[in-house]
Image 1: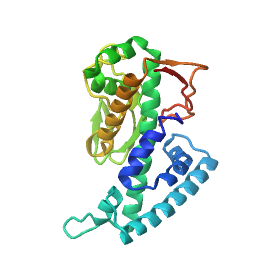
Image 2 (image 1 turned 135 degrees about the vertical axis):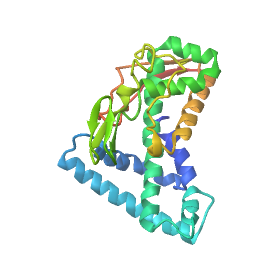
Image 3 (image 1 turned 30 degrees about the horizontal axis):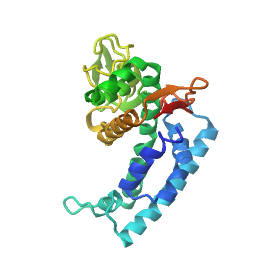
Image 4 (image 1 turned 30 degrees about the vertical axis):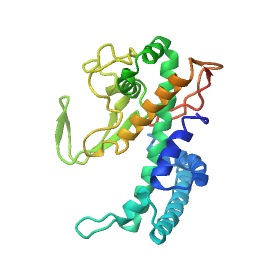
Length: 266
């Protein structure tokens, strides 16, 4: 997790957004603190830590926005500052909050996708060998990794009008928790849903959400996972688990590993 799953996505989104390389590692614990607010239960201590971390990120990106205004660069933050539609531009608050969201979401969930995905492949060596022999399966393999052990297990939506779902009436203004992990194992959508199959080609997983809130970085996350798997299989003849069973974070909403120890042989 420390050698690959975190450094790769934080480097990619950092380069795109324009966050200096030396600053990136310090954001990992800050973003981790903020994500506790996505959990179904949060302690006063967690809330305090999340608030402190949020303030630190807001101050940092406010300074970075100011620096880009004074000295534009070829990065996404400069593009956001310069973006205009019908004479309107993003406000300072919108710029800072958007930058924080893009940066945090750009590495936190992808880190878990890589960790969860490599664990699933290590747990199913037959599927790892199958992918090694047929790289045309990279696309479906990443979709299966997203379905089988999604980095985001739960999301919330608020109804704007009365709706009926599955025979249940939900009134307007109701907050609904969508269990994405369960939906990705729906036997009405996926054949033998508990089976891990890198060649599966059925319904798309709901790991990135849907509708107007579909993940903005979905294509980037998919590409990063495909590249990582392709390069690992090119470079190493053996990828297998070693040591104690990997530990999962104490989290329901975001599912990811604390550690993942692999033996890799060229």
